Image (cartoon, rainbow, N blue to C red; front, side, top):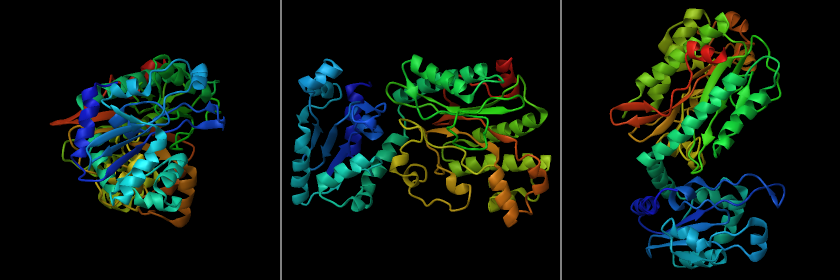
Length: 460
């Protein structure tokens, strides 16, 4: 945990951004897999963690702006629960570590909110992403479930986004712990890979690195020979000579800060000539994105820098043609790069995605509806303290290639005859995590093998 002062200061800063009303924070519950006592690994709500720190289920908290109160609602374990779970600190003892002293039974939360509502005071809450919290809000506030999402507080969302988007020094240190552990995970995957073993062996290797260090996975492991599938969580394929593996995985620390890295490496000890050519274009795009980073630069421009590099590289290989800027404007490159160059990262691997990308990554500005560009999660001007991923890639997606060719989409920019010969190529992505500084950026964590030479050296 961070110091008491950290959590007290975070709550004080939040109080300074919203004028009145009651700020309601619902913690998460245990989530059963197949019956009540057999639960998934517990994960506390990240905004609850950020302001209150307590990593336990069945809690709620309010910050009453009008009456200047901070109250934690929850219950101590019963004796029967202690029989199964062991001796635990009291809720009061736990709360005191985070600067909370007003502790009330969870059953009193509804009465408190109803009294505030009857007094004409506004109840601010965040949009629920778990169905049990949706139901809970309906019960606490007396609203129909379909009304709740539209009644979530934009003012509260914007205030929390502003605070959580700017990482403190101690947060950056914690993220770097996660990134360093994530690098170890990727090196383990590179060292483990060989023809004749399943993807699941590599997935097990990276998972064990995270767990052995006392952490956990920041998100489900992507470990696949089908790198053209952006989020592929199937691990049942056997590795064969001539293939590549795309690994996208990251660790989460005990304080729940995340790392998020991607690597692509050959099943053999070296890349093929064709793999090296595409890999280098992708790596050049990665560097172009890094070179464009600076405070005040919109991340959309960082994304476009990567896209231009991909277009120009694919033009040299004969996959694309025509004017680069026109191809970029029409989104022709999205056949090969249908996603974004990066996203915010912190307590969530896609930081605060539950609060809405339009607030987190776009500062309230509308997103594009163009294919490819609409998947860019981050576009706003970058500011010191922002932590984000850099992850351009090149993908050959057979179904997308077939569709665009059938429709004649962007055919003046794309040589479909050439593309057709690479339909079974798969996909390539590298990813690093960066911090925006006052004068530029810094790559977080220790170096991850990234160049062709570095990756092949690990594979020997």
